[in-house]
Length: 103
Image 1 (cartoon, rainbow, N blue to C red):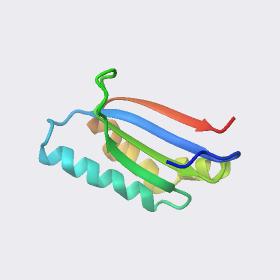
Image 2: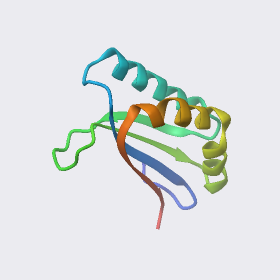
Image 3: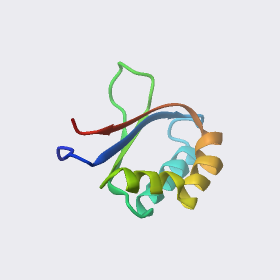
Image 4: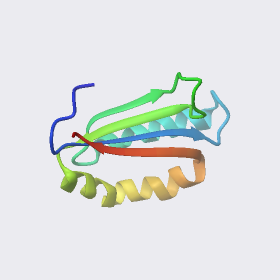
């Protein structure tokens, strides 16, 4: 992942699903996550499997935004709001969000 430059925002989330590992529901949720990359302003979208035994989460996603305005527009975008309400809230068991900017 490239170094975050001044003014840019990196949005990251680690999460665990309510679905059984390897289930069709898990696969469907992960495919649906990838659709977030098509929302205007999203750059460098990555969806990953967590490998560390040091935390309870199973998946991670990151994306970058050119600036806070792009991040705010993404957060308010109808497709993002619909995903959060229709998929994230009912299907995610636990998560931690980390939104960062360069020092």
